[in-house]
Length: 264
Picture 1 (cartoon, rainbow, N blue to C red):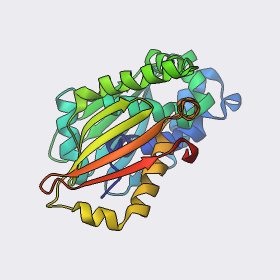
Picture 2 (cartoon, one colour; picture 1 turned 90 degrees about the vertical axis):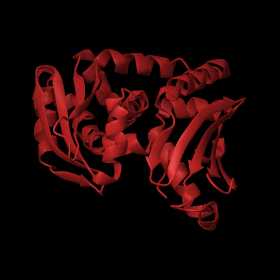
Picture 3 (spheres, one colour; picture 1 turned 45 degrees about the vertical axis):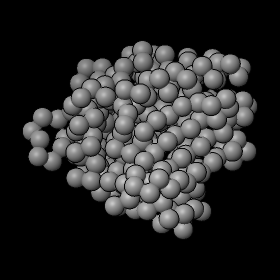
């Protein structure tokens, strides 16, 4: 079973976040009026970039103040993401993409905000002529950074988590992969809880329990990779625990994996 949390956003944003970090972080070498041209030239050298069976990043181009990333989705995630984007339930994916933009590009984000650059993700789906786009503007990035920088006490951290959980509801239930459905995200005191339903025709809870160490390692790796450093530091300071709870759809059998603050 794949890592469930933010799988869609990881698939959609991984190619961008990795290459954009190298293009934007050397801002002292790039004149402001050539930033987009520089990014396009540097990232085009690495294309096409195939991300397993999930996504193929094919083209990067700029028009005006917007940089476009064109990708084709693999059949493994295409149907689920087509439904999500077609129904307008894209906020969780968009939020995760902003997490990765800030986390990976780091100080290069300052130039994007200063120059009011827009980032457009254009996704093409097998069997559909119409592409779908997720667009992130500089104001959204700036607001996101400001909101995370204000997490300077436990109360604000809890409010931030509650706001994330509330915005998350519009995307739920979310079919993460053929075996996993994200049912809810909530906060219970100092614990963030993600609740999943496992389709036992695909994989049983018993099978998952046989690979606990590997499953837990993947969860921790993805949590660390997808939570921005500013937020992660405040989570750690507040003692935030993250719990992933899985329930079999037929047996009702459960599995719980926990990440402690000392681990991230």
